[in-house]
Amino acid sequence: MGKFDYKGLGLRCGLEIHQQLNTKKLFCECLSVLRSDEPDFTVKRKLHAVAGESGEIDIAARYQASLEKNFIYQGYDDTTCLVELDEAPPREINRDALKIAVQVALLLNCKIIPITQIMRKTVIDGSNTSGFQRTVLIARDGYVETAYGKIGIESVCLEEDSARIISGKNNEVTYRLDRLGIPLIEIATSPNIFNPDAAKEVALHIGNVLRSCDVRRGIGTIRQDVNMSLMKFGGTRIEIKGVQEPALIIKTINSEIGRESKEKKKIEPQVRKALESGETEFLRPMPGASRMYPETDLPLLRIKKEFIDEVKRSLPKLRSEIAEELKHYGLHEELIKLILKEDKIDEFKELAGIVKNPEIVAKALVLYPRELASKNNLSEEKINELLNKDILASLLEAVAEKKISEGQVKEAMEKIAGGKELEEALKFEEHDFDKIEEKIINLIREKPGLSPNAYMGLLMKELKGKIDAKSLMEVINRHLK
Ligand SMILES: [Zn+2]
Image (cartoon, rainbow, N blue to C red; front, side, top):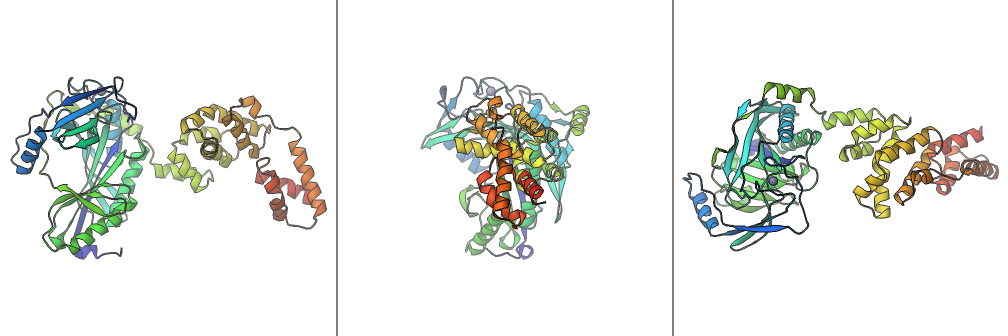
């Protein structure tokens, strides 16, 4: 799709990003894990929350309709408690989650709110057993720098995730309680983003900040919504839910511009769902503003200066900064990406002290385990257990002490992945190296006058895994002299 004249169209958009945090639940001690095993119990409920003092017809109507529905909640004895079931009051807010929210807020240049009230936001679709979602404003008035100037960050909130829907028939909806209460950070930018490239850049920057902190990873752990309006077509607010990744933001905005420019009638405010293709589809009419009222079961939340100062002192480095740092080791970009993806920065730095070649360290840490896992049909957990940091340290020490060559590291790892003990895995035929040298001498004798690279090419196939390219080249050059 071609580019549009965004200025002429009067495009205005803002982003809302939700990210799950990697801590226990926000208002109880349960673990934040999504489960696929059979639930231990189910509970059947009718909505029992009192609707807020709603003046708006759509909310009231939907509320009436939801009263007729049965909601079934599935739970587990060990990872859901009475708080998720709304049969016990919430516990004090999780300090780890609060710390991460303050980290994110500071990294986004926001002002932390020293005394803040935990609020209840009415939710009537049954995805919260209580009929409301708890949310608390942590910070506001931040910004991110982009190539298009400063873009404001309006607010950083901490809130509880909803229960996830398992199935829904006419008058009965089944939810699983495992997701209910998982801490979510909600970041809202100002609506003053005027072109899709800037929106993408802001989303990437926020993603970079989030992944520098202790957040959950993987599908469904981050959700990005785009709010947009086009002055040329009346400036109607359209909310697009669930854009999968920053790269799709531009496509999604462009396809909404395409849709609105084709529309014959007046554009209605609405919530649309982002599709993987970049297209969107109608989800529901725009609801009125959510009703919020104070959470009376919890005291005011005080975020003390000492707490903020402590967070400031231990602010995590941004992933972009870490990537720069890893470049100084001379690592290939793909290896840097893998180290960041698998969150093995500290392990890498530690192991890089053992041998002089950072590349073999990175490969042993993030590349070979992947290859061996798929080759041996092992899970990620199993391979990490077999090839843990201590094992890798021992292998690299063996390289440093010249007991094995760099080229033998992968083979040794493969033996361990295949069930051998470390000591066994480090045993290679003693005369291997002599034999290699003999082969090289014979080859040079048989085919004299070739370039070192040509000898490399002839030998590498046969010797692959027995010796690394660098050492082989050294031996060839030595004998050519
Ligand atoms: Zn719980």
